Length: 270
Image 1 (cartoon, one colour):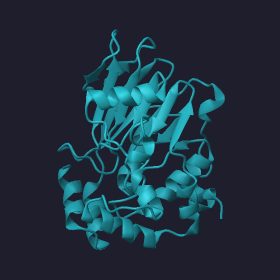
Image 2 (spheres, helix red, strand yellow; image 1 turned 180 degrees about the horizontal axis):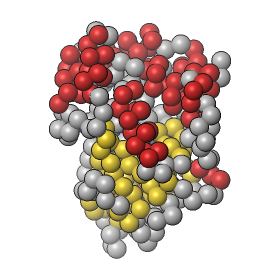
Image 3 (tube, rainbow, N blue to C red; image 1 turned 120 degrees about the horizontal axis):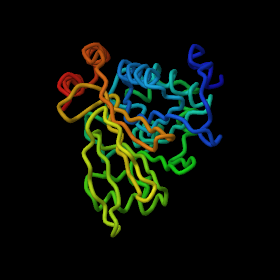
Image 4 (tube, rainbow, N blue to C red; image 1 turned 120 degrees about the vertical axis):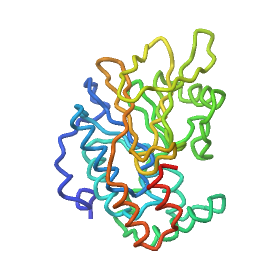
């Protein structure tokens, strides 16, 4: 079974390949965590705002109750030219060590392993750790050591990530909140907290690291899903929050018998 067969309704999306050289708007989504309601809400929002291409920064799975549905949407998009990279939850679900995970996260890893069929396993097994397209570098955690799953939660970690990527624009997820770092004239990393919905010019004379936030499990007290839009023509980034039916997503978590903490997290955004 090919990846388009996972969800034929998405196999015909008109997507352009990132390395084609075309100037476009690129929606960057991370940490979907098996939350189909949040994923579909963000994709619809991105299309309304002119997105022509899509990047998925890992942790497509874990925590949520809809792993098959999420892969059924994402895999055909990747088949049509979207980019996706591996996250630590995918690594764990494929059989990697997960002793360092919190017990509730580990429980969902074991549950998700039982849900996946061979086509879904083949899809996530084929995901690269990083991807580069044009002037952009994509990674789930830090480019400094992608497989160690380092959290970028300060300027020092951000600087190491930008140095390692070597690209003018680096995009990452993993930390579940939105943030933007850039290099100043003397090379030190500075942090910038983006205003939601406001386009931020990204000068080519600096290096930038954009943390996309989490589509499927926000942790900043806001239940709305998070993603960002990279406008290549205007050389700008816009961070968005998208309301979605988080109550339905939480009900599914409970119905699947997954930890109550994960349902409450969707309902509170924490």
